[in-house]
Length: 386
Image (tube, rainbow, N blue to C red; front, top):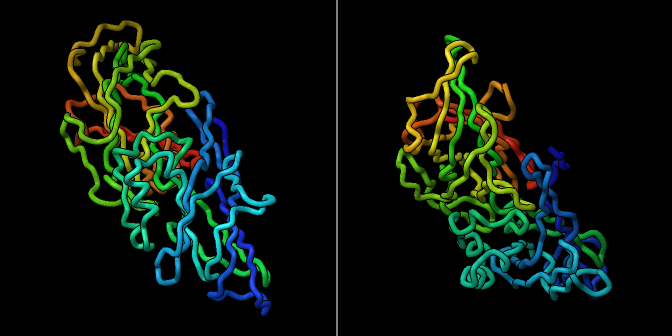
């Protein structure tokens, strides 16, 4: 797995060139100044499955809100993006001139809104007249869950407008770290493996075949705002087999050898994941519908195998992650809430006959899988199946 540096997606350095007849030296006041904005810092790649593929999140469009101390929006300006991701057009490479505003104005950036939002939502955002109004505009998780990793919605990573500081009598700057407004949960492959009886090691079962009939997400805020905060109710699937949340129904047939049968989305550069954008603030989990399950069993440690008969291949069964761990054999459960701008990646879920249940979210027999976590960029976790 390729390792990427552990940094925020991008640093947006907003440099304001100031013109004034006043030359009293460095200070902050409310005099009218000419604001020039620049965005710098290369967006980060994040890993893609075991193939080492990667995508780069880019800043393709954006809006800069200029916010007064009382929270009112003084103005909003569309960012003029240059030929390279993150570049801002302007005279002689100095940046984009936004106009003259009081120097105590703060800045909040929302990126890629024109690329991923519908026209009505974009109009509501750009028409907001207060910082509070910006925070009240929400997007449903369901409408954004399948957005690509290449053009995530971006905003100030702190979730707050950034203040500037004077560096000379004619220049001031403010550094804004921007990151995706949601977290991202990704699953690479699903493997049908081997079960060994904990009391009698010679008793084993191994999966011969299966089909993934759907991959779904549980436990996530149903809405989020542009400041990266989950809003509304937290979706819970419970034990219902009628899936009403985000996810992908479909048919992915496993291939491989007995005890190592693997199902995954078809290879397509640069994406080979079941992947979902989810709001921060909860620990979202994966549920998987499985059908056409066949297996064989042994009671002599693998010398003789007989077809299994206790699982019906015509029935649908369910795998539910109960817990995550940060590596194989790690004793403690990873239980930190998801954070915006981070990718939570499960490279592989390996299940056996014991992990298959008649409903999602059973109370018996947990399934733990490994998860990794990195800024967008990437993070992988091990997860417990139920």
